[in-house]
Length: 102
Length: 494
Image 1 (cartoon, helix red, strand yellow):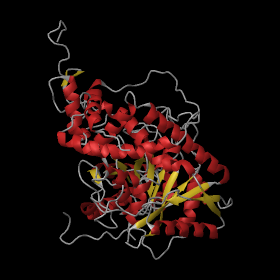
Image 2 (cartoon, each protein chain N blue to C red; image 1 turned 30 degrees about the vertical axis):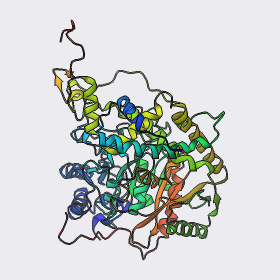
Image 3 (cartoon, each protein chain N blue to C red; image 1 turned 135 degrees about the vertical axis):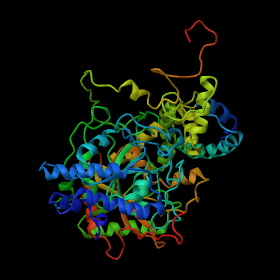
């Protein structure tokens, strides 16, 4: 039983903040249906009373000492910023005509 | 024999006895890169000056009588999803095309401290998502055994660099087969260590519960040496194993305990090349002759591994890749508000496969689907782990094919994502279980490309993998070439 993914593509792309062209959406609807059909085969397995595995680590989590260490300098932190202003990452305006200082 | 053709073990010996210098060794690999690289294109970034600088520093230290590590002066190549301070690290993605990491990955820190010259950063499928390197945003790497075929992926560049002698060692990363599958396609050793054995700090995340860094090498000893150097606890990765690494070389040489080996009975062999099965049986026969006990082993629920993996890995990826928003680093697609800047940046910056995985993951994690997809997949993962635990009560090691087929043609599966995913079907469940898994050369297909055997051990038993792989290595057919004779197309590179 195939899932019709075409209705979901738009919604999921919005959730993922992913701009897709019409052509991409059409192609993706078919491909994702196929992939999810295969993935859905896991429904055949009975997993009542099975605990989920989110990681495979069987040793206790190791904590490190809470010590102040060296951090990256601001210039290092900002060196890859697509848009920088002084010591800040620049982004498009968030508030409209508000009383914020911008 | 030229220096680039020698084993790492031999190069290390020659350098410590001062018969050759690290500069000479490094230059030999750089010359080889010049000769072969135009035809296979394994590297995204070349770093010859940096390599020679490290090499001469090591040579100076050695002549000053400083005590050096065995791998000091041995060059290597690193996959381009492992952060190198001040050196472009792209993940083969347009979104990170100009990204310069402000820090080194822990493995890179160790490599620098040891004095291993870095030859360059290798090509891969974008964000390690793929099985052929065709998903690189920049170019496709070619299989040196047959230039019309893929080298496998996602660590295809690293596999090709070592198999052609452009690097004696390389690092890759393996989330669901990305080291073992290209190692099989290119005819060399590729190890996915136990989850937690090598620090992931600085490995650009794809699926955090599955990602592992691991070595490529031409023989088990070289592979063991590099693992030994990199394995260990890292306070910056809380998932890294707190115990020190054992001496893998002596574990490899240990000839006293003859292990019980399970040969994996695949529930479904749909799409498996018959020669693959023959190769596995040949290797099993060889090990039996060496005194190992061989019997069939079943992992009954691993058939569901592919389904579970293609929900878990994309789910984790969709979350990890949320960080590419055009604000702090990477490509920015412009826009007049945050929302459309995010969408444009990601829409233009990611390639098709990365977009598909983000979509699957977002879907599987979204309201109404979480229980049926992601949670269910995590439960199936528990069942798969139980199968391994049961199997390892009876067997010390499991062997099976490393890939269902030898390398396929460039373009053959590019338009069929599901077909592409199936090329990792032998590798995925070991990753879900978190166990160490090694791909070893297992002879040649009649079409002239390599076949691989996958060896799987219980957690933290990498020494056992090297031990058994070394029997295979010592018994290799002397008639078969260890390395491809790269056949240069007439008229030179494209």
